[in-house]
Length: 140
Image (cartoon, rainbow, N blue to C red; front, side):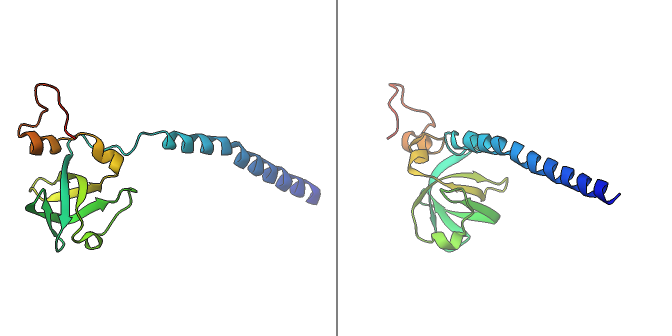
């Protein structure tokens, strides 16, 4: 009886060990899939602007006084959360979303590569109509 129990335990241990090795290729594939993404994905409704944090929650967006909403989230270029107090008096190019009351709810600090992509808000500020000029010139 004792021998059957120990053989059963060895069999279970071998199966657990084999199943842990079987999942390793799947982990490597999922990490590779994440690395091939072209960057962060933003909601289609985001606007672009230049953010300066004055005294949190007071901010300016494109030089106009604004306010962060309670519970606002600011994500750094590495997509980690950043406290607004750590950004005081820095000019940052950001994508942002407003809450229904009009306060700024979500902010993404952009990398240089992300900032080069055209986004609503940036064109509105430069061209006044939200679209590029008729001759097809693009914003720098």
